[in-house]
Length: 448
Image (cartoon, rainbow, N blue to C red; front, side):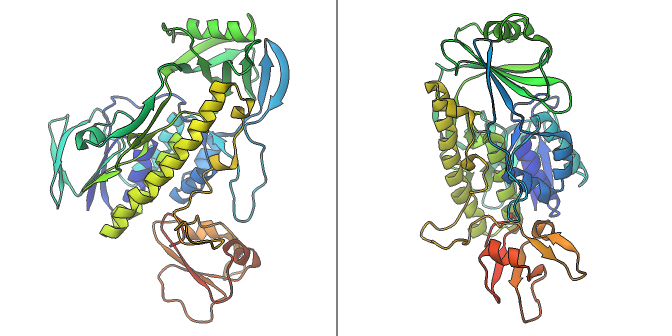
């Protein structure tokens, strides 16, 4: 089997790793001539950290990133309080990474590219897909380099303006709100403590203002501010003007602007995630407001869901990709929209993050199944003792591109090639299991 992936963002890179580690021939192309250098999606949710552990990149992500910082809130230039988007919580046996982590998107992509290269796959820059057709047996794609390739599957992970989605004729249903515009950028700020974030709110409307969130690996902040005029000045001078307006002159001196853009709320969901042998994932299939930090994370999990299914190849398995991931994307878009509306309404709770933003509650179960843990639910972690008496975690044993059979206090020899025999009480509790139970875990660590 061979697969062509259009788009080398977090979604395309995750999918490339998922396929390459299964021995699938894969190419990852991107129309850009150089790699993106900016923070953009900088919040990694707990479920994404679990995915990154399975892919073997979590240690580097944690090393280069940072926990979500406290936010110092100022209104009219006067300090009001410290706030957190979410209070840190301690890890549990079933949830090893309960807190989000901050890492600029360009750094996340670099880590994923390095892992992909370990499998001998390198991103092909300056290579766009310019046309394709498909039969029941293959996809033929034309590339901007003049090359024509034939593959078993094509995946469009090529962003909100996806050529693949448009060429398929798949509707991208939703809205773009032109009345709301925001200036985003990465910039250093002398005079501010880089260990914390800042919210500088207006005197008359505290929820109207600018946010400066520290970025790991340097002295830059991610800058976010509303625009109330048509002529958007994305220069360093334009950002400085907004800081002086909301924080007060002399509060911070900006320098080293490396990336900036004007953002508009764009909330859209593709009518289909698959047409024949062609799939779409990530922003090509759904675009989110930045509120709640869901976009990048949802795309990574699209890829994590799709990778093993492409490798499996059975039609009933491939068909479940759209069923599972489109339903989830629709739910996550609702969360992001609700938080965005709170910002527009001036609701201070918009600064907080609920349990539903961590993506640990994603489930593909049958809604009629009322059991505490059922097929389609996330497989929880658990402490175990191996045959030599060493303490290990279940996630360590699940790691890899295979399904795993869990057996709770078994009395017969194992026949499945990837079996974990369990006896620790915490694992029984996490899985609501009884002696003699057997539970099959899918390659993406959901209950089968």
